[in-house]
Image 1 (cartoon, rainbow, N blue to C red):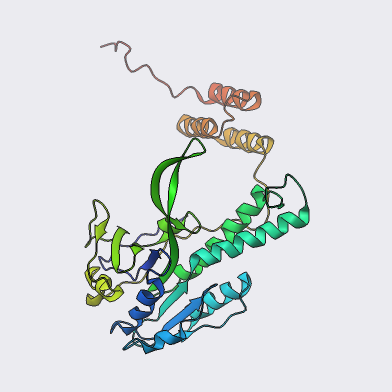
Image 2 (image 1 turned 90 degrees about the vertical axis):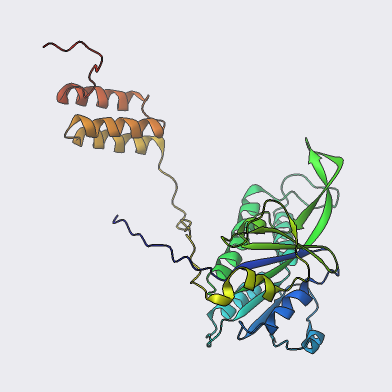
Length: 322
């Protein structure tokens, strides 16, 4: 592999902004109001389990299109991917997804239906069968597919989610202490570039942000918050860079990981081909990190090759003859 590098631009990129709030705190209103920003061209609103905000077209300056889909997970993912793929004009397109709480509920409900069809394991108090680990892994993958699609958008993204005050758990039991928790997949708060919490209508807290221009030691009140004002504080009105992401790609071929026997055989082949003691040392270290250095075949191959090449180990504390 040839090493590829690039210098950082120092420019901010359009964020994925999470607006998390209690019921009727104004999440959708704040998101739609962002369409009035002079920084934005087109706005595409993708609703999930929420009433379409037709009346919000009366917000002064608001200009947005409602994306129509069939309400299924594949339909929602297709709608998001199609929105990302839309041609862009002189100004970037804003994509709004409202709400991620409903999306995660939908994915979870789909997994529950599959678990019930399998009819294996234990039933819970609702009469549903336990959702197995493989199904939760599938759910997490479906969630990540949505987030990956949004990351490909080279423009602003706003997602909403519900925010609830819940009991702090300790040793699996609720305590009297309370904390605010975003109701969605647990990775959402990590994937969002900035988080605004709306614990009551008209009051805004910025609780997290990835930025060199805004530094937070603790959640901070944001009086007279608007999305456009946040974008300005992030330096986006002065120009933006392209959003880049160190994407990871899962192996979807279904190939099984190499077995211990296969790893041992490969190690023995590499050891036999070693041409000097330094290379042999590296192979021995690699065998240790992979947990096979103590296996008889690997030990025998190392000892045989070491005898052939001679040990690379020297006693640096030995007395040197003059």
